[in-house]
Image (tube, rainbow, N blue to C red; front, top):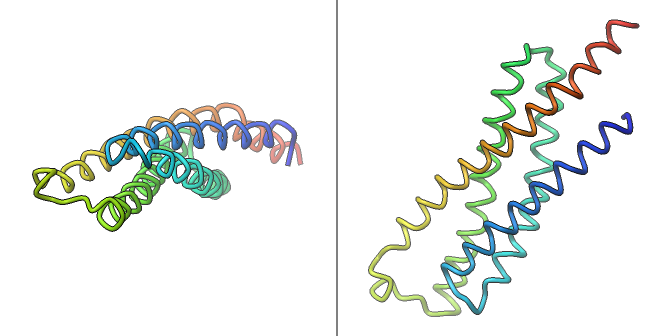
Length: 154
């Protein structure tokens, strides 16, 4: 692995962790201003996990030898799926925490919890698609071209 690849991987992990922590904090304040730090921590851990998963899939997509547009599109879709996964982790655990510890009553919330979670899943898919699309674009333009050039030289 080249130094440029390692730097790209580190930057992607940092971006995904920061986005996960930010959206996790936002989700935490929706559930409980007292326990928002739990959602922030879940965003960091989930962001790291889906960032590694995203990079693994991106490398597999690149190894298949697809055209640039297809690599970018598949990377964006994988990013959206990773965003959904991280969002599900955060909201699932926060909903369980809210129901068990905070005695979150559906009558008090007006039964809005399912709609909050559905809206969050859409936002998670959107942020995953955007972040995944940007990272895939950079990967296709910088890293994948170097892989093609080095395979042509051999």
